Image (cartoon, rainbow, N blue to C red; front, top):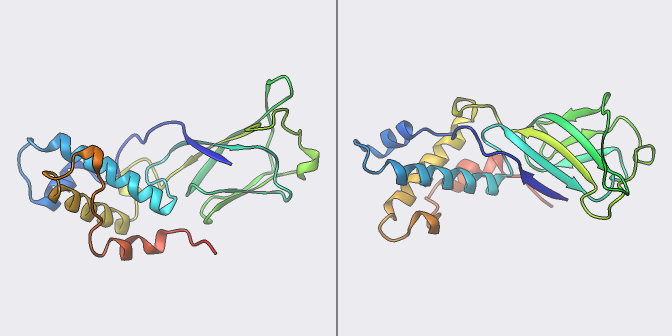
Length: 193
């Protein structure tokens, strides 16, 4: 199972203005650095939690259909399933009609219940990545859709990275995770047994 982001987010969960207010900064001299730190904090938080904060398109690749009718999607929350495509033996894509499929996009991981048993679905003609599921995941289009707790965690993280700006370049960040960060994001982490 491989997951690929098809498009970057159209916005960030926290704005430059929110970040500057949190850091009590005026002026525009640090705007480029702050924008880079905001992107880094979002990417780190998304890796830690398996969430997509801002809605955007992803593609899940599968080698075969699962034995059950349920496909688990680890990036969430899943808003919509855009397409399910199977590649035949000649490499020709065949888009499946998934009318009747049921999506539980808020579950962690999200679940897509297929409308038919996997045995009734066309098998992929290539051994690797023969099935593609395109979906949109994220809390919404804007930072106002993101839970406030996650935004607070990002602001604290940006502040910690900003403190290290003379020691670490933006490319070397995140260099620090602030105290309390783990408590803020803990309810959003996916638990594995």
